[in-house]
View 1: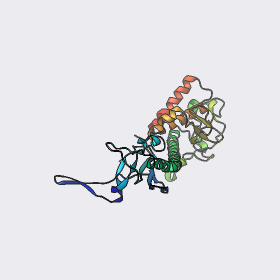
View 2: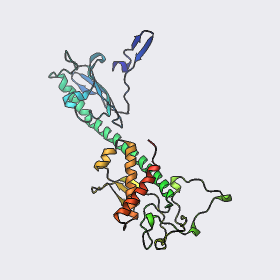
View 3: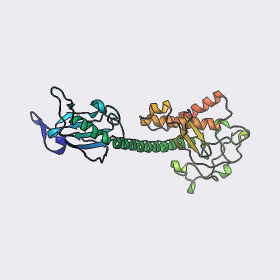
View 4: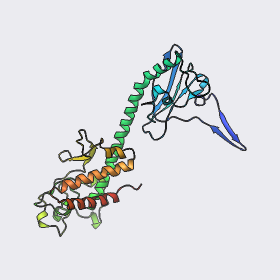
Length: 321
């Protein structure tokens, strides 16, 4: 604390090399919490909340003259739980009346000053917890939106590769399901090459879903019984947490065009802290919903084969780790 205020400058010199000792800089959102007034002086709080528990963070206790009594508030029994043990709260609490025990680094538990310290810190705990919840929620939502968009990009490329551009989530509309549930339209309505015979540049994900009147060419060897009766243009599905999970990992709402994923499922909880693993998991869920929805009458072996066919292509378009 004293180093942070600039009261001291410490330099370590070894032979011809010198190293300036600098205080650890807290990171995250600074909490605007007022000082707590006690009969023994003010309790000053300099606290920060980080969005991720990606390293060990501590709140130090500082006494008279800027001397650190203990490095971690959570070492005190009264504060050994959340939010102080979350690894997301850092900074220091200064109370000059607080004393250190002799012989080891610990807070002296007297009958007057220490209870006042506990009461003062307890008073700011709700504000710290609310900020921690808000920051965590904002980061979770931001991550979910970013990963959902990444999944949409991946499936835009996969579906383009499979010549299934006109609807990523649709039931086969022919008399019988076509091979791999890939539905196509007549070549007469298919878009042609660009001006001068040159091919159009590769579309971005947002352009992968053409309007209803723009459809992909029909393969020459398409089975007659799988001929579609007409397309229903729709964007790539959205991917959002399920507001009412039923125990399944995911479900598809055809009317809303949304794949809902269960963010309370043990598998989601297992991977949620690693972004690359979470992206892989969400992409797998969308692949599952796509295959199941497009193959409602497929036998188990056919469904499994189609799932592998889809996942192979999804994996090819996943970002490299």
